[in-house]
Image 1: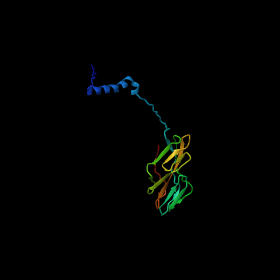
Image 2: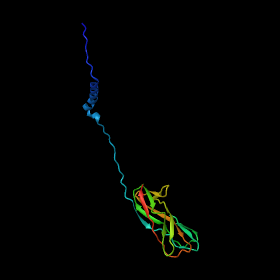
Image 3: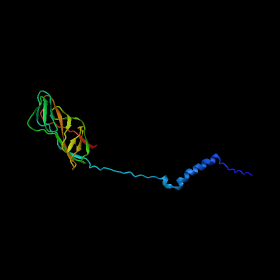
Image 4: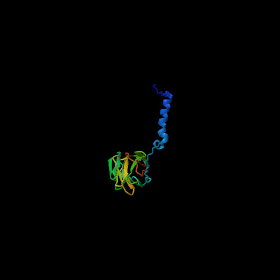
Length: 187
């Protein structure tokens, strides 16, 4: 007599449930495989707030106007030159100078409220234009003249500002004045 063994085959739906149960079994048995962790670092750099103040005003010095218009250019290094009918009278004239405190080796952006202003007095207003910021050992200008690096390990800095004054023909004698604004920001 030959006996045959009859095996019962699972239905397709039962096979899917069995495979799903086999997939879940390792995750349920080993929760460590279901978790992972990593560490990151957090950092911050605290900068000293920028502060600065005016040391002296932009002073083109004493000049003599004539019947011909001209200009006076005051460089950041203090040198003065003229064009047209303007004559320098005596000494005098100095660039504006600003000084302040910040964080060593940081880049600072300089922006002017406007690159031209008008100064007023007893005669027609005169235009001041083409402001130029000078480099110093404590405020080293970068390739673009609108930023500098604070080079002093103490964080102190200073920088001069020059400009060009347009003097009209027959400009009335007297004192002329106006204001300009400089803003500094860390980059």
